[in-house]
Amino acid sequence: MEALRTTGRDLRALPGSVVARSIVLGALTWVADLAALLVVCTAFGIDVTLVQAATLHLGSQAARQFTVTPGAVGIVEVVLIGGLVSLGAPAAAATAAVLLYRVASHWIPMALGGLAARAPGRRAPRRSVTRRGLG
Image (tube, rainbow, N blue to C red):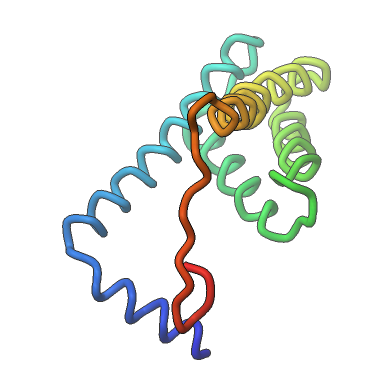
């Protein structure tokens, strides 16, 4: 509970513009991710509505909270493939669409982040020690 209180106190200390930008950028990330899922489904001939795709996307995001695999590898794919098949998509098309979607939305950004972290001249971020631990 103390950690929750501390987090709340830290959030209230942030300027409103920072909080607003964070909320907007977070929402845009989800919208772009949903759009990527819709585009890939369309490319593989899977007829899915915006509401259906949003429901599947939300379901996969909820399911990923209960997994122990990094990046929710496995659970997101199972939820999305199962959801698309239950909506009438052929299993092969659903599998191909979801795998392409995951490569584009998870693996490519992860690889780019790894490359950026190893870029020449890049220094590790400085960490300060505060009363609460590493900051």
